[in-house]
Image 1 (cartoon, one colour):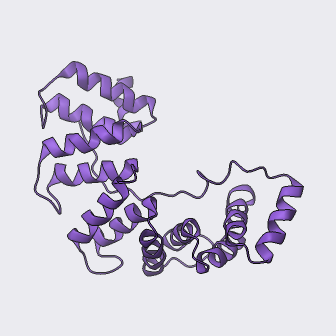
Image 2: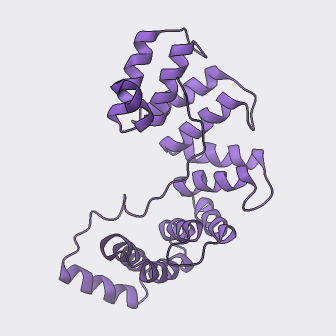
Image 3: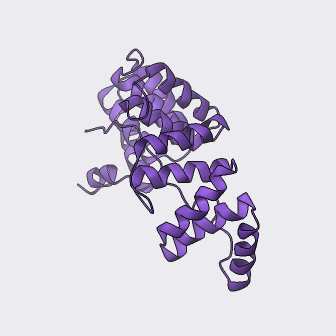
Length: 224
């Protein structure tokens, strides 16, 4: 079984804020609040432009205004705009700049994403100590991708000593959050007996769980 180990960057504009209604009255009131300087309204308006109308330039404009005022959610999203080049020219350094600000405010997703840049030396020089510190800070907030990524590092021996038992421990934490790749990785560990006793029945259970959580690599194997 092939197990794909990679550090995940999270592209999240909508998961936390788009439970709001997008009716005309709400939109007009939100726009007034944003224009009057409300950082929260600016953040929500930026997200609405991105998700509902697909207008990245307006989304960037309002997200930027909110980020400048210190809104950590906006700072994280602004970093994503720069990272992917949506609504603005792609600029990894600026993505890191805003993720660092959000990370310092305790934003778990930004901490995870900033770790990616430190791992690859894309923001500042490669710094394994910083990578692991950021991931552990994110994991302390129970962010599933931080659990996954810490496990991935232990499985490859990158930035930390290789330790499959530790890898399995962190993947199990991510699995409890229904993380499909962590479950896929656990299936591989149980199939090969790495970090755990070999158990093909448990491997099959994790493989099916990974597929149920829409991890396509697992689904390909389940369908065979």
